[in-house]
Amino acid sequence: MESYSSFDNAKSLVKVNSFIRSVYNWMALGLALTAFTSYYVASSPALLQLIFGNQLIFFGLIIGELGMVFYLSARVQQMSATTATGLFVAYSVLNGATLASIFLVYSGSSIASTFVVCALTFAVCSVYGMVTKRDLTSMGGFMMMGLIGIIIASLLNMFFKSSAMSMIISYVGVLVFVGLTAYDTQKLKEMAVTQPADISGTMVRKGAIMGALTLYLDFINLFLMLLRIFGNSRD
Image (cartoon, rainbow, N blue to C red):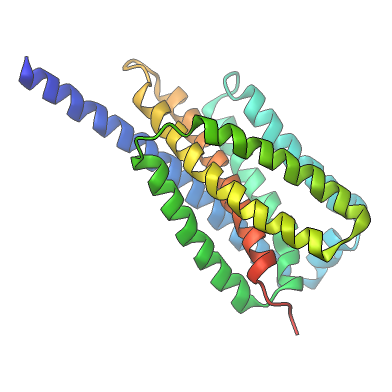
């Protein structure tokens, strides 16, 4: 009996590791596509003019991104794994196009150094979420309330245009996305552990895509908050 139990535990660990690895691989692919697209658009005066010189196109891309996230989150169970993957890839590319604006505002060196700081911070928080025995559910709920507060404050600041308010939002945002990274990682670990033994490969793939999207959003938002704090403007 003991050998069977050890075998089951080992099998379960392999399943969990495989799922988590798949999530991070897809997240890394999404970030790579976003970074490449952003740099490519920033290097093309024609594309910059097309996207940022026309408000209709710019806001159309923003609305398209939001639509993809909401549609993928709401309908992932009904769509095929290929469709879910395609939407995630398309979202990563569109987000890269709109994020090209950071190259117009911040120096390349500060973008690179902030990315490194963000990656290290994200890694520490994600590892904490993976290994901690503490239930982060209550913290996750608190962070979601903080996220809603950030969204409302950001919308209001579009009218007030207060630099002090913008900086406060950025500092609070860093705390919120640090907490959400740990919380979301713990949720993904629990999802992997509780997956039925007979779950189909398609369902596993869709779960990995949704997990990758969640962590991708945490990473991008943490990066943008840190960039507002530490980024140096272009000369």
